[in-house]
Length: 95
Image 1 (cartoon, rainbow, N blue to C red):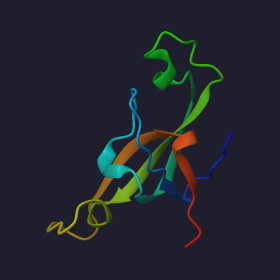
Image 2 (image 1 turned 90 degrees about the horizontal axis):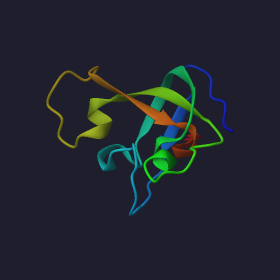
Image 3 (image 1 turned 135 degrees about the vertical axis):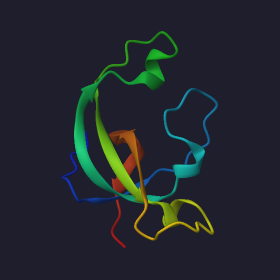
């Protein structure tokens, strides 16, 4: 399992899936910062199909700048959006 610290810059995976996902398409491929670890939970992407959702996955709250999410965002440059994303969708962003 990944273990990210608060403040770590991460990138959300971009995946085409035909099944349930908790990661909205608009945030896939975007870069954010770990705001906090929310805990460890059974994977809802498996639970949706009657599987046991194990092993448990780490769930993080990730903060994204709105200007990095929405092309042409006209609001203040410091506006953010927070999403809770499981660890298997996140990787370290080294750029």
